[in-house]
Length: 438
Image (cartoon, rainbow, N blue to C red):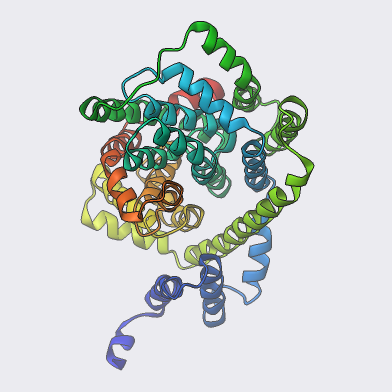
């Protein structure tokens, strides 16, 4: 044993210590943020490359960024919209538009998720907010419960891809690139996911002969549109504000909260003051967890950088193949695997210092990689053991987790195709940012 340790130089030892130490703590169910902080602090005690004060100082500076404030702000918007009757109006409008197509409420489910994505930017919020409405409505119309749970979970992935998106704010802030460009890059991919899922639902529904809703008249569609108009206007105002440069991403979040409060209290009058305490308690709890993750991730990334671990990982990947396409396929496989057991924001914090230098050295567009990374990690929300969206929807539907997993597997085909398109067809994610921002 001593001979083995003697054959390992100190640099290699610290590289192994950082990775293995972090993974061991995670497997021991230590929270991810604390795992990163404890591993880095122990490393700073043993290594001369970082001072002992590094952990505290870097953690503070890591969260003291104006852009990161957008994350809890957009979370607040989603919570306020969920409590204001917005989700019900969005679902009703989607039903009037596409409820008559074979697959009926399955298509409504997907389209409502696209609408709600422009409000919350969160897959979990989509599952919790729209999920109950969607699954209950599909069950009442005679849809198979497994199908209802599966498409509800699958469609929730649109939330973090279509702007606004919490994970993309995280990526843009830590990678020092335009969050607005990432948002615009996600627009095309969000629409593609919508189209592919609807095509899948159409094929399934034709085979199983699921019921459809009567075709709504133009008058009914227009009436439903008027009821949901103010909610639909929010994502339009967000995108307009970002593309024109009138306000920053963080300021858009703050203005959106004011708009959501106005809708809930004045326009729809469903947001009562007695709900506010519970809403903001949830927001404070979630914001605290995310800020701790960001701080821990910033600290851990600094330690990885001090060890030049990204360069070492790059050497290993290029030793397997010098072909950029093969290297990218390996990275995609790694991201898909990581997303199955790690919370998305934590995975982004770890992957940026490790993978971004590698893809940049290959000449890969950073915006394209940001959207690709987020999409790959989002697929993990549907894949055990984490599969948070499956846990939420299976609970709502009253079925076992494994039944929900079997119901969602058919949509992996669409997701993998779109992931490969996103990773290898650059214009899909860059044409809109280039058009808007030059």
